[in-house]
Length: 465
Ligand SMILES: Nc1nc2c(ncn2[C@@H]2O[C@H](COP(=O)(O)OP(=O)(O)OP(=O)(O)O)[C@@H](O)[C@H]2O)c(=O)[nH]1
Ligand SMILES: [Mg+2]
Image 1: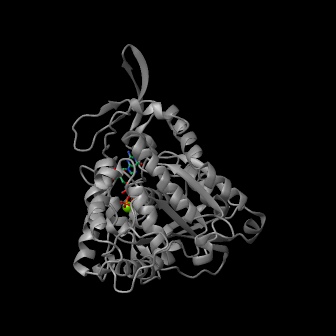
Image 2: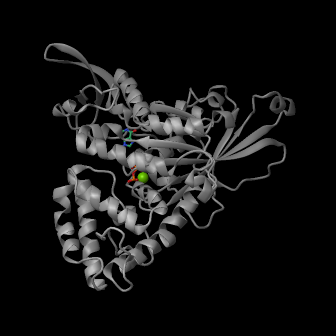
Protein backbone atom coordinates (compact mmCIF):
# COMPACT_ATOMS: atom_id res chain seq x y z
CA UNK A 1 0.00 0.00 0.00
CA UNK A 2 1.14 3.52 -0.72
CA UNK A 3 2.21 5.56 2.32
CA UNK A 4 -0.48 7.82 3.77
CA UNK A 5 0.78 11.08 2.33
CA UNK A 6 -1.44 14.07 1.72
CA UNK A 7 -1.73 15.30 -1.85
CA UNK A 8 -3.32 18.38 -3.27
CA UNK A 9 -5.76 17.73 -6.09
CA UNK A 10 -3.57 17.92 -9.12
CA UNK A 11 -4.39 18.71 -12.77
CA UNK A 12 -7.76 17.35 -13.77
CA UNK A 13 -7.23 17.46 -17.51
CA UNK A 14 -8.27 14.33 -19.33
CA UNK A 15 -10.69 13.30 -16.60
CA UNK A 16 -14.36 12.75 -17.25
CA UNK A 17 -17.40 13.32 -15.01
CA UNK A 18 -15.62 14.21 -11.81
CA UNK A 19 -17.82 14.29 -8.80
CA UNK A 20 -17.80 15.07 -5.10
CA UNK A 21 -19.86 13.06 -2.62
CA UNK A 22 -20.36 14.20 0.95
CA UNK A 23 -21.12 11.26 3.18
CA UNK A 24 -22.78 12.02 6.51
CA UNK A 25 -21.77 9.45 9.13
CA UNK A 26 -24.55 9.74 11.68
CA UNK A 27 -24.47 7.97 15.03
CA UNK A 28 -24.77 8.43 18.77
CA UNK A 29 -21.71 8.40 20.99
CA UNK A 30 -19.96 5.03 20.86
CA UNK A 31 -21.97 3.81 17.87
CA UNK A 32 -18.75 3.24 15.91
CA UNK A 33 -18.29 6.33 13.66
CA UNK A 34 -14.54 6.69 14.14
CA UNK A 35 -13.97 2.95 13.67
CA UNK A 36 -16.13 3.05 10.51
CA UNK A 37 -14.23 5.99 9.00
CA UNK A 38 -10.83 4.51 9.90
CA UNK A 39 -11.61 1.17 8.29
CA UNK A 40 -13.29 2.75 5.27
CA UNK A 41 -10.37 5.05 4.52
CA UNK A 42 -7.72 2.44 5.16
CA UNK A 43 -9.48 -0.14 2.96
CA UNK A 44 -10.28 2.32 0.16
CA UNK A 45 -6.61 3.28 -0.01
CA UNK A 46 -5.98 -0.41 -0.69
CA UNK A 47 -8.36 -0.81 -3.59
CA UNK A 48 -6.10 0.71 -6.26
CA UNK A 49 -5.39 -2.01 -8.83
CA UNK A 50 -7.47 -4.71 -7.15
CA UNK A 51 -10.31 -5.43 -4.77
CA UNK A 52 -8.18 -5.43 -1.62
CA UNK A 53 -10.58 -6.20 1.21
CA UNK A 54 -13.55 -4.80 -0.74
CA UNK A 55 -14.65 -7.62 -3.10
CA UNK A 56 -18.27 -6.42 -2.98
CA UNK A 57 -17.40 -2.90 -4.07
CA UNK A 58 -17.92 -3.39 -7.79
CA UNK A 59 -15.45 -0.84 -9.06
CA UNK A 60 -12.75 -2.39 -6.85
CA UNK A 61 -13.62 -5.98 -7.82
CA UNK A 62 -13.54 -5.00 -11.50
CA UNK A 63 -10.12 -3.44 -10.92
CA UNK A 64 -11.35 -0.08 -12.11
CA UNK A 65 -9.95 1.88 -9.17
CA UNK A 66 -6.72 3.34 -10.53
CA UNK A 67 -5.57 5.40 -7.61
CA UNK A 68 -6.75 6.29 -4.12
CA UNK A 69 -5.22 8.99 -2.00
CA UNK A 70 -5.88 11.27 0.92
CA UNK A 71 -6.34 14.92 0.05
CA UNK A 72 -5.37 17.94 2.05
CA UNK A 73 -8.65 19.61 2.88
CA UNK A 74 -9.09 23.11 1.52
CA UNK A 75 -11.30 23.95 4.49
CA UNK A 76 -9.16 25.82 7.01
CA UNK A 77 -11.90 25.82 9.65
CA UNK A 78 -12.06 22.06 10.32
CA UNK A 79 -9.07 19.99 11.51
CA UNK A 80 -8.00 16.87 9.67
CA UNK A 81 -9.37 13.53 10.84
CA UNK A 82 -6.29 11.86 12.38
CA UNK A 83 -6.08 8.94 9.93
CA UNK A 84 -2.43 8.28 10.78
CA UNK A 85 -3.17 8.09 14.50
CA UNK A 86 -6.25 5.91 14.20
CA UNK A 87 -4.41 3.49 11.89
CA UNK A 88 -1.36 3.62 14.17
CA UNK A 89 -3.62 2.57 17.09
CA UNK A 90 -4.52 -0.59 15.17
CA UNK A 91 -0.88 -1.21 14.23
CA UNK A 92 0.35 -0.84 17.83
CA UNK A 93 1.47 -3.82 19.92
CA UNK A 94 -0.98 -4.67 21.35
CA UNK A 95 -3.42 -2.89 19.03
CA UNK A 96 -6.00 -0.64 20.67
CA UNK A 97 -9.13 1.35 19.78
CA UNK A 98 -8.88 4.99 18.75
CA UNK A 99 -10.20 7.26 21.53
CA UNK A 100 -13.66 8.79 21.63
CA UNK A 101 -13.91 11.90 19.45
CA UNK A 102 -13.81 15.34 21.05
CA UNK A 103 -14.16 17.70 18.09
CA UNK A 104 -15.23 18.04 14.48
CA UNK A 105 -12.77 16.41 12.05
CA UNK A 106 -12.71 16.00 8.32
CA UNK A 107 -11.17 13.53 5.89
CA UNK A 108 -11.12 13.98 2.11
CA UNK A 109 -10.28 11.15 -0.21
CA UNK A 110 -9.78 11.01 -3.95
CA UNK A 111 -10.55 7.87 -5.92
CA UNK A 112 -9.45 7.87 -9.54
CA UNK A 113 -11.26 5.19 -11.49
CA UNK A 114 -12.05 3.95 -14.97
CA UNK A 115 -15.73 4.54 -15.67
CA UNK A 116 -17.53 1.49 -17.04
CA UNK A 117 -20.10 3.43 -19.08
CA UNK A 118 -19.86 3.78 -22.86
CA UNK A 119 -18.91 7.43 -22.71
CA UNK A 120 -16.23 6.81 -20.15
CA UNK A 121 -14.75 3.93 -22.11
CA UNK A 122 -14.95 5.80 -25.40
CA UNK A 123 -13.17 8.74 -23.85
CA UNK A 124 -10.56 6.27 -22.63
CA UNK A 125 -10.05 8.53 -19.68
CA UNK A 126 -10.47 8.27 -15.99
CA UNK A 127 -12.80 9.99 -13.60
CA UNK A 128 -12.30 11.24 -10.11
CA UNK A 129 -14.59 10.77 -7.15
CA UNK A 130 -13.84 13.05 -4.28
CA UNK A 131 -15.26 11.70 -1.02
CA UNK A 132 -15.71 14.01 1.96
CA UNK A 133 -16.47 12.63 5.41
CA UNK A 134 -16.82 14.36 8.77
CA UNK A 135 -16.34 12.84 12.21
CA UNK A 136 -17.60 14.42 15.44
CA UNK A 137 -18.61 13.51 18.99
CA UNK A 138 -21.88 11.56 18.81
CA UNK A 139 -23.37 13.47 21.74
CA UNK A 140 -23.62 16.61 19.59
CA UNK A 141 -26.03 14.96 17.19
CA UNK A 142 -28.80 15.22 19.77
CA UNK A 143 -28.62 19.01 19.57
CA UNK A 144 -30.09 19.01 16.08
CA UNK A 145 -33.69 18.64 17.32
CA UNK A 146 -33.16 21.66 19.64
CA UNK A 147 -32.97 23.96 16.62
CA UNK A 148 -36.68 23.51 15.98
CA UNK A 149 -37.76 24.05 19.59
CA UNK A 150 -38.37 27.04 21.83
CA UNK A 151 -36.90 27.03 25.32
CA UNK A 152 -40.35 26.55 26.83
CA UNK A 153 -41.11 23.56 24.60
CA UNK A 154 -37.77 21.95 25.31
CA UNK A 155 -38.03 22.58 29.07
CA UNK A 156 -41.45 21.00 29.23
CA UNK A 157 -40.41 17.90 27.26
CA UNK A 158 -37.14 17.49 29.19
CA UNK A 159 -38.85 17.78 32.58
CA UNK A 160 -41.50 15.33 31.53
CA UNK A 161 -38.88 12.80 30.46
CA UNK A 162 -36.78 13.34 33.60
CA UNK A 163 -39.66 12.40 35.89
CA UNK A 164 -40.28 9.06 34.15
CA UNK A 165 -38.82 5.56 34.36
CA UNK A 166 -35.15 5.00 35.08
CA UNK A 167 -34.48 8.76 34.97
CA UNK A 168 -36.74 9.61 37.91
CA UNK A 169 -34.46 8.64 40.82
CA UNK A 170 -31.37 10.10 39.09
CA UNK A 171 -33.11 13.45 38.52
CA UNK A 172 -34.32 13.85 42.12
CA UNK A 173 -31.69 16.33 43.36
CA UNK A 174 -31.89 18.58 40.29
CA UNK A 175 -35.71 18.48 40.23
CA UNK A 176 -35.80 19.36 43.91
CA UNK A 177 -33.46 22.33 43.31
CA UNK A 178 -35.38 23.80 40.36
CA UNK A 179 -38.61 23.18 42.31
CA UNK A 180 -37.28 25.41 45.11
CA UNK A 181 -36.10 28.16 42.71
CA UNK A 182 -39.08 29.17 40.57
CA UNK A 183 -38.57 30.34 37.01
CA UNK A 184 -40.15 33.71 37.72
CA UNK A 185 -37.93 34.31 40.79
CA UNK A 186 -34.99 36.69 40.62
CA UNK A 187 -32.36 35.78 38.05
CA UNK A 188 -29.40 34.88 40.23
CA UNK A 189 -26.33 33.76 38.22
CA UNK A 190 -25.12 31.52 41.06
CA UNK A 191 -28.49 29.73 41.23
CA UNK A 192 -28.50 29.33 37.44
CA UNK A 193 -25.07 27.75 37.49
CA UNK A 194 -25.90 25.42 40.36
CA UNK A 195 -29.05 24.29 38.54
CA UNK A 196 -26.96 23.65 35.44
CA UNK A 197 -24.36 21.63 37.38
CA UNK A 198 -27.06 19.43 38.93
CA UNK A 199 -28.71 18.88 35.56
CA UNK A 200 -25.41 17.96 33.96
CA UNK A 201 -24.64 15.52 36.80
CA UNK A 202 -28.07 13.98 36.17
CA UNK A 203 -27.30 13.50 32.45
CA UNK A 204 -23.92 11.95 33.29
CA UNK A 205 -25.60 9.52 35.72
CA UNK A 206 -28.20 8.56 33.08
CA UNK A 207 -25.37 7.58 30.80
CA UNK A 208 -23.06 5.92 33.32
CA UNK A 209 -25.61 4.00 35.36
CA UNK A 210 -28.44 3.27 32.94
CA UNK A 211 -26.69 3.55 29.55
CA UNK A 212 -29.39 5.93 28.33
CA UNK A 213 -28.96 7.79 25.02
CA UNK A 214 -31.42 10.67 24.83
CA UNK A 215 -29.23 13.15 26.68
CA UNK A 216 -29.61 16.82 25.70
CA UNK A 217 -27.90 19.19 25.17
CA UNK A 218 -25.01 17.17 23.74
CA UNK A 219 -22.27 19.54 24.84
CA UNK A 220 -23.17 19.16 28.50
CA UNK A 221 -21.49 15.74 28.31
CA UNK A 222 -18.87 16.59 25.70
CA UNK A 223 -18.21 20.34 25.49
CA UNK A 224 -15.43 20.26 22.87
CA UNK A 225 -13.48 23.45 22.46
CA UNK A 226 -16.01 26.01 23.43
CA UNK A 227 -14.66 29.56 23.68
CA UNK A 228 -17.04 30.75 26.40
CA UNK A 229 -18.11 27.99 28.83
CA UNK A 230 -20.75 30.26 30.38
CA UNK A 231 -22.78 29.70 27.19
CA UNK A 232 -23.59 26.29 28.64
CA UNK A 233 -24.80 27.39 32.06
CA UNK A 234 -28.48 26.69 31.59
CA UNK A 235 -30.93 23.81 32.07
CA UNK A 236 -34.67 23.18 31.74
CA UNK A 237 -36.84 24.85 34.39
CA UNK A 238 -40.55 24.36 35.12
CA UNK A 239 -42.83 27.15 33.83
CA UNK A 240 -46.48 27.63 34.65
CA UNK A 241 -48.57 26.76 31.57
CA UNK A 242 -48.73 29.73 29.21
CA UNK A 243 -46.30 31.77 31.35
CA UNK A 244 -43.57 33.87 29.73
CA UNK A 245 -40.25 34.47 31.41
CA UNK A 246 -40.30 37.84 33.25
CA UNK A 247 -37.33 39.99 32.22
CA UNK A 248 -34.51 39.56 34.73
CA UNK A 249 -35.96 36.29 36.14
CA UNK A 250 -34.16 32.93 36.43
CA UNK A 251 -36.31 31.64 33.54
CA UNK A 252 -35.26 34.60 31.38
CA UNK A 253 -31.53 34.00 32.04
CA UNK A 254 -31.95 30.32 31.14
CA UNK A 255 -33.95 31.10 28.02
CA UNK A 256 -31.42 33.66 26.79
CA UNK A 257 -28.55 31.19 27.27
CA UNK A 258 -30.47 28.40 25.53
CA UNK A 259 -31.12 30.66 22.53
CA UNK A 260 -27.49 31.82 22.43
CA UNK A 261 -26.32 28.20 22.61
CA UNK A 262 -28.49 27.30 19.63
CA UNK A 263 -27.39 30.32 17.63
CA UNK A 264 -23.68 30.42 18.48
CA UNK A 265 -22.88 26.72 18.90
CA UNK A 266 -25.49 24.34 17.48
CA UNK A 267 -26.40 26.13 14.27
CA UNK A 268 -22.79 26.70 13.08
CA UNK A 269 -21.93 23.05 13.87
CA UNK A 270 -24.77 21.63 11.79
CA UNK A 271 -24.08 24.17 9.09
CA UNK A 272 -20.65 22.60 8.67
CA UNK A 273 -21.83 19.03 9.24
CA UNK A 274 -24.84 18.96 6.95
CA UNK A 275 -23.98 21.41 4.19
CA UNK A 276 -24.30 19.78 0.80
CA UNK A 277 -24.59 16.23 2.18
CA UNK A 278 -25.90 13.77 -0.39
CA UNK A 279 -25.39 10.35 1.18
CA UNK A 280 -25.96 9.21 4.74
CA UNK A 281 -25.13 6.20 6.86
CA UNK A 282 -26.82 5.96 10.25
CA UNK A 283 -24.82 3.77 12.64
CA UNK A 284 -26.62 2.17 15.58
CA UNK A 285 -25.06 0.01 18.28
CA UNK A 286 -28.18 -2.10 18.69
CA UNK A 287 -26.35 -4.92 20.45
CA UNK A 288 -25.13 -2.68 23.26
CA UNK A 289 -28.59 -1.39 24.09
CA UNK A 290 -30.13 -4.88 23.81
CA UNK A 291 -27.50 -6.01 26.24
CA UNK A 292 -28.13 -3.12 28.64
CA UNK A 293 -31.82 -3.97 29.00
CA UNK A 294 -35.26 -2.57 28.28
CA UNK A 295 -34.76 1.01 29.57
CA UNK A 296 -31.56 1.50 27.52
CA UNK A 297 -33.06 -0.13 24.42
CA UNK A 298 -36.26 1.95 24.52
CA UNK A 299 -34.28 5.11 25.16
CA UNK A 300 -31.88 4.47 22.28
CA UNK A 301 -34.88 4.02 20.04
CA UNK A 302 -36.36 7.30 21.22
CA UNK A 303 -33.04 9.11 20.67
CA UNK A 304 -32.82 7.69 17.17
CA UNK A 305 -36.38 8.71 16.36
CA UNK A 306 -35.70 12.21 17.69
CA UNK A 307 -32.65 12.58 15.46
CA UNK A 308 -34.24 11.06 12.38
CA UNK A 309 -37.30 13.24 12.84
CA UNK A 310 -34.97 16.24 12.60
CA UNK A 311 -33.27 14.65 9.59
CA UNK A 312 -36.72 14.15 8.03
CA UNK A 313 -36.10 13.42 4.38
CA UNK A 314 -37.69 15.11 1.40
CA UNK A 315 -38.36 18.65 0.34
CA UNK A 316 -39.60 19.85 3.70
CA UNK A 317 -36.64 18.33 5.52
CA UNK A 318 -35.24 20.81 8.08
CA UNK A 319 -31.75 19.81 6.98
CA UNK A 320 -32.54 20.68 3.41
CA UNK A 321 -34.25 23.91 4.34
CA UNK A 322 -31.53 24.98 6.75
CA UNK A 323 -28.38 23.57 5.19
CA UNK A 324 -29.16 22.50 1.64
CA UNK A 325 -28.63 18.79 2.30
CA UNK A 326 -30.17 16.63 -0.45
CA UNK A 327 -29.80 13.11 0.80
CA UNK A 328 -30.74 10.56 -1.85
CA UNK A 329 -29.33 7.39 -0.29
CA UNK A 330 -29.54 6.34 3.33
CA UNK A 331 -28.15 3.20 4.90
CA UNK A 332 -29.19 2.21 8.42
CA UNK A 333 -26.50 -0.03 9.85
CA UNK A 334 -26.30 -2.04 13.07
CA UNK A 335 -22.62 -1.89 14.03
CA UNK A 336 -20.19 -4.24 15.81
CA UNK A 337 -21.85 -7.25 14.17
CA UNK A 338 -18.69 -9.29 14.85
CA UNK A 339 -20.05 -9.77 18.39
CA UNK A 340 -22.48 -12.33 17.00
CA UNK A 341 -22.04 -15.29 14.62
CA UNK A 342 -23.32 -15.38 11.01
CA UNK A 343 -26.94 -16.40 11.52
CA UNK A 344 -27.38 -13.82 14.28
CA UNK A 345 -26.02 -11.15 11.95
CA UNK A 346 -29.03 -11.82 9.70
CA UNK A 347 -31.26 -11.37 12.75
CA UNK A 348 -29.45 -8.14 13.55
CA UNK A 349 -30.06 -6.84 10.05
CA UNK A 350 -33.77 -7.67 10.34
CA UNK A 351 -33.91 -5.97 13.74
CA UNK A 352 -32.35 -2.71 12.55
CA UNK A 353 -34.64 -2.72 9.48
CA UNK A 354 -37.57 -3.08 11.85
CA UNK A 355 -36.40 -0.32 14.18
CA UNK A 356 -36.17 2.22 11.37
CA UNK A 357 -39.33 1.25 9.50
CA UNK A 358 -40.92 4.70 9.87
CA UNK A 359 -37.93 6.81 8.73
CA UNK A 360 -37.43 4.28 5.92
CA UNK A 361 -40.95 4.87 4.70
CA UNK A 362 -40.49 8.62 4.94
CA UNK A 363 -37.22 8.49 3.04
CA UNK A 364 -38.59 6.31 0.27
CA UNK A 365 -41.61 8.60 -0.12
CA UNK A 366 -39.05 11.35 -0.65
CA UNK A 367 -37.54 9.14 -3.38
CA UNK A 368 -34.37 8.42 -1.44
CA UNK A 369 -33.03 4.88 -1.68
CA UNK A 370 -32.89 3.23 1.72
CA UNK A 371 -31.39 -0.01 2.98
CA UNK A 372 -30.52 -1.70 6.27
CA UNK A 373 -27.43 -3.74 7.09
CA UNK A 374 -25.48 -5.35 9.90
CA UNK A 375 -21.76 -4.60 9.71
CA UNK A 376 -18.52 -4.65 11.64
CA UNK A 377 -16.10 -1.91 10.60
CA UNK A 378 -13.22 -3.63 12.35
CA UNK A 379 -13.73 -7.34 12.68
CA UNK A 380 -12.24 -8.65 15.91
CA UNK A 381 -13.64 -12.18 15.97
CA UNK A 382 -14.06 -15.35 13.94
CA UNK A 383 -17.13 -17.55 13.90
CA UNK A 384 -16.89 -20.87 15.73
CA UNK A 385 -18.96 -23.40 17.66
CA UNK A 386 -19.14 -24.53 21.24
CA UNK A 387 -21.12 -27.07 23.23
CA UNK A 388 -23.35 -25.65 25.96
CA UNK A 389 -25.51 -28.03 28.06
CA UNK A 390 -24.85 -30.80 25.53
CA UNK A 391 -26.03 -28.64 22.59
CA UNK A 392 -23.85 -27.37 19.79
CA UNK A 393 -24.16 -23.59 19.50
CA UNK A 394 -22.64 -20.93 17.25
CA UNK A 395 -20.20 -18.59 18.99
CA UNK A 396 -17.65 -15.94 18.12
CA UNK A 397 -14.01 -16.38 19.07
CA UNK A 398 -11.82 -13.39 19.95
CA UNK A 399 -9.34 -11.91 22.38
CA UNK A 400 -10.91 -9.66 25.04
CA UNK A 401 -9.13 -6.33 25.43
CA UNK A 402 -6.31 -6.70 27.95
CA UNK A 403 -6.73 -10.50 28.04
CA UNK A 404 -4.14 -13.14 27.22
CA UNK A 405 -6.38 -15.91 25.85
CA UNK A 406 -9.04 -15.96 23.19
CA UNK A 407 -12.53 -16.73 24.44
CA UNK A 408 -15.49 -18.47 22.83
CA UNK A 409 -18.35 -16.09 23.33
CA UNK A 410 -21.99 -17.12 23.03
CA UNK A 411 -24.04 -13.93 22.68
CA UNK A 412 -27.53 -15.45 22.86
CA UNK A 413 -30.19 -15.02 20.21
CA UNK A 414 -30.76 -11.64 18.59
CA UNK A 415 -34.50 -10.98 18.24
CA UNK A 416 -35.63 -9.98 14.73
CA UNK A 417 -38.20 -7.52 16.07
CA UNK A 418 -38.03 -5.18 19.08
CA UNK A 419 -38.41 -7.51 22.06
CA UNK A 420 -41.73 -7.55 23.93
CA UNK A 421 -41.73 -6.73 27.64
CA UNK A 422 -41.41 -10.38 28.74
CA UNK A 423 -38.16 -10.87 26.85
CA UNK A 424 -36.15 -8.64 29.09
CA UNK A 425 -36.05 -11.17 31.92
CA UNK A 426 -33.34 -13.09 30.07
CA UNK A 427 -30.69 -10.46 29.58
CA UNK A 428 -27.83 -11.01 27.20
CA UNK A 429 -24.51 -11.98 28.67
CA UNK A 430 -22.34 -8.87 29.12
CA UNK A 431 -20.54 -8.19 25.82
CA UNK A 432 -16.76 -8.18 26.06
CA UNK A 433 -14.75 -5.40 24.41
CA UNK A 434 -12.66 -7.34 21.93
CA UNK A 435 -9.14 -6.30 21.08
CA UNK A 436 -8.98 -5.08 17.47
CA UNK A 437 -6.90 -7.13 15.02
CA UNK A 438 -3.34 -5.95 14.58
CA UNK A 439 -2.65 -4.46 11.17
CA UNK A 440 0.65 -3.70 9.47
CA UNK A 441 2.44 -0.37 9.96
CA UNK A 442 1.00 2.14 7.47
CA UNK A 443 -2.29 0.34 6.97
CA UNK A 444 -0.77 -2.89 5.60
CA UNK A 445 -3.30 -4.71 3.52
CA UNK A 446 -6.25 -2.94 5.10
CA UNK A 447 -8.57 -3.69 7.99
CA UNK A 448 -10.72 -6.83 8.31
CA UNK A 449 -14.44 -6.03 8.40
CA UNK A 450 -17.89 -7.49 7.79
CA UNK A 451 -20.10 -6.02 5.05
CA UNK A 452 -18.33 -2.67 4.82
CA UNK A 453 -17.84 -3.12 1.08
CA UNK A 454 -21.53 -3.96 0.60
CA UNK A 455 -22.44 -0.83 2.55
CA UNK A 456 -20.14 1.23 0.38
CA UNK A 457 -21.46 -0.26 -2.84
CA UNK A 458 -24.93 0.86 -1.79
CA UNK A 459 -23.76 4.33 -0.77
CA UNK A 460 -21.28 5.06 -3.57
CA UNK A 461 -21.63 2.38 -6.24
CA UNK A 462 -23.35 4.72 -8.71
CA UNK A 463 -20.71 7.40 -8.23
CA UNK A 464 -18.00 4.88 -9.14
CA UNK A 465 -19.79 3.43 -12.18
N1 LIG B 1 -15.99 -5.61 18.06
C1 LIG B 1 -16.12 -4.40 17.50
N2 LIG B 1 -16.11 -3.30 18.29
C2 LIG B 1 -16.24 -2.10 17.69
C3 LIG B 1 -16.38 -1.95 16.29
N3 LIG B 1 -16.50 -0.63 16.02
C4 LIG B 1 -16.42 0.03 17.20
N4 LIG B 1 -16.26 -0.87 18.22
C5 LIG B 1 -16.18 -0.58 19.68
O1 LIG B 1 -16.96 0.57 19.96
C6 LIG B 1 -16.13 1.59 20.55
C7 LIG B 1 -16.60 2.94 20.08
O2 LIG B 1 -16.35 3.08 18.69
P1 LIG B 1 -16.03 4.51 18.06
O3 LIG B 1 -15.78 4.30 16.61
O4 LIG B 1 -15.01 5.23 18.84
O5 LIG B 1 -17.45 5.23 18.28
P2 LIG B 1 -17.85 6.73 17.89
O6 LIG B 1 -19.20 6.67 17.28
O7 LIG B 1 -16.78 7.36 17.10
O8 LIG B 1 -17.98 7.41 19.34
P3 LIG B 1 -17.79 8.98 19.74
O9 LIG B 1 -16.51 9.44 19.16
O10 LIG B 1 -17.78 8.93 21.25
O11 LIG B 1 -19.00 9.69 19.19
C8 LIG B 1 -14.71 1.24 20.11
O12 LIG B 1 -13.77 1.77 21.01
C9 LIG B 1 -14.76 -0.30 20.12
O13 LIG B 1 -14.59 -0.79 21.44
C10 LIG B 1 -16.40 -3.15 15.48
O14 LIG B 1 -16.54 -3.13 14.24
N5 LIG B 1 -16.27 -4.33 16.14
MG1 LIG C 1 -15.62 8.96 17.41
